[in-house]
Image: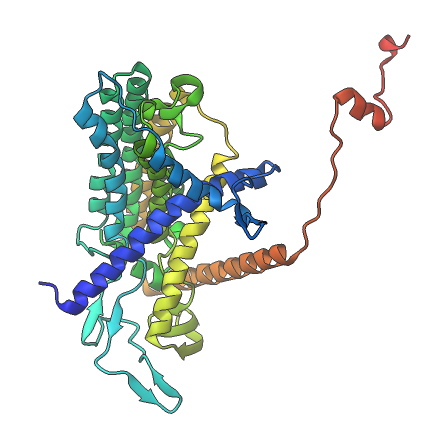
Length: 456
């Protein structure tokens, strides 16, 4: 039974996760357009403005997302005459709800230890530090997941499969052949890639020794990030996650050139908006899962529950304790920062790669990713057995190698932050390009050489 404190914290966690996913879905619609403008060197969203005292404010095109939301509410809610009215109205709900429910088991920070009293120190009153290992020695311990279930990742796959039902019902109930074809494509695509996605995690669960997502993150914090011990599984899971969201280059269920808009062709108004927003929310939730399983979750290199500890194997070069409240803030920022980076990476892929043919998409899933995921399970099992029979010296060497990967990650993160800061501080340089026909462009450059047979 929940106490008053636990109930309040549960509501706070729900507000954090649902608020992030909903706002991320809206902002990612802007990032999709803005990122496409950056990548293709063209003007992005810049038309929606707000006038205040005669002055126009654009805010980098952020008003486009707000304009879309308002427009969805006021558009006509059309329903085909021969559609199944109950299923037609139920399908958008079956698509959106599982995406939101997935966030319940994803931890976005370490367990928060709430002490009885604030400790008084010569420098003032601070939240005390906690031990690096073990459970919280405090009055209240709050897991930073809405529902920290023991089944963890199994709950994720159980809910992820419900999206297939929503897409299939939407296409079948619309009484439209293009919608039905899109629904069949969506169902077969999602089933195919869920098999590869699930098998790619078998190796990770073998190494972590648990199906709880928070324990997976703690293992990575004490050893190394999952991407270093399961690199093949990371790429398989990432590719399958992009295919599950049905976005380019895997957008065959809604290919405009073939199926109009696929399984939601007949939808309009806010029902269409729910399908539209659900795809972007899937990008956010899949990025959360990748961050949790392969990128250390809330963990940062050499930063542990008790503070900063720079060590390689048994050699500790530096250690300092940090109040628990600051460690919690750092963990939350680290988790959501990684999620944002992964979301941008998916948009970079969306504006870079062309669409597959449907036969190519299915071959990639069944003849590409599936055999690779099975091979990854085999290699992981053999490697785990070999590691269990090694001596202490070999295991100590692996521990040093794990700490080296942490140092590598720390250097990469620092370099990326500095590169981003320098890029934002550098003034924008715009070059004028020649616009005209190819003949005029070649003439301005001095003409083109002609072969001897073309000479007059």
